[in-house]
Every structure is written in C-alpha cells, then in structure tokens.
Amino acid sequence: MPDSKPNQEPRYAKRLEIQWVVDKTRDVSGIDVSDPEKVAEHFRSMIGDSYVEKFAIIMLDPHLNYLCESVLNVGTHVSTQVDVGGILREVLITGGFNVIMCHNHPSGNTQPSLADDKTTAMMILLCQVCGLQLLDHIIIGDNGNYVSYFFDRKEIWETLRLQSERIRAQ
Image (tube, rainbow, N blue to C red; front, side, top):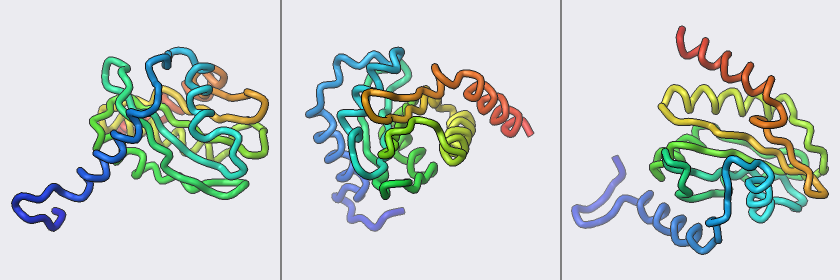
C-alpha cells in the first residue's frame, strides 16, 4: 500500500490524471478499431517515423470506446524492452478491457521477430487470465507499411491464442 496521508491521493492517481489530460487532447473520434489501416495510421501519429523503436498501446472499454493511450517504451534503433507486466498494469489501472499493442521498426521492415511473437503470445495469455482481450498487435514500418497480427498473420494469431488457452487450462 503506498504511503499516503488520509486526505492525499495515491501517487498513481496523479500520474493517471496527467495521462488522461494528455490523451484527451488527441483527436481519436475517427478511429475504427476494426480497420487495421486506421489503427496503424493512429499509431503512426504517435510513434511512427522514429529513428528508435517505440512501443505503445491503446486501451478501450468493453464496448470498444477509447479510454486512453500510452507510449510505454522507447528503445534503440534495433529494439525496445517490452514489459508485459507493465502493459497489463496500465490496462488495469485505466479500467481498460480491450488493448491494441503497436511498435515501430525503424529499419522499415515490418517482418515480426521472434521477440515480437513471444510478446504477443504472452499478452494473449495474460489478457485471457485476467479476463481482458488483446485485439491486435501492429508493427509499423516505412512508406505506410504495417503488419497486423490479427488480420495479416491470422494463422499465427490463432496458433498463439490456442496455445495460450491450453496453457491456461493446465
């Protein structure tokens, strides 16, 4: 339990309040979360065309209404560390139910790496365990290119989802 005086808010509440103020300045009314191209365009405005790899999420309520977004990690020109526990924490703190993950590849190549597959698999599993839903993981490249795990890598997405269901059932 955080140290707090009786009339003092916990520290994370102040951080969350600041995040909401920042996020509400973005125009998100036009995001159609069922269209990976629109979602990729939105993420590109957040993290795309950077010379370093960045990892971000959009959090949505159960009715797919936008709650907030966050750039969680900024890495190097070849990678970024992704803390799946940190992602889950952000989603739970904001009251999110659905989450879309995204990161850029500064090289411009949208081919997912083994680390990308592992992160996606772990998040599918953690979301299932916590009663949440990972809607997609998008990788942004150059020239408007992107890859959506859910739409472009459907076979891998389903394999990861089924594997995580088996793990959860054990």
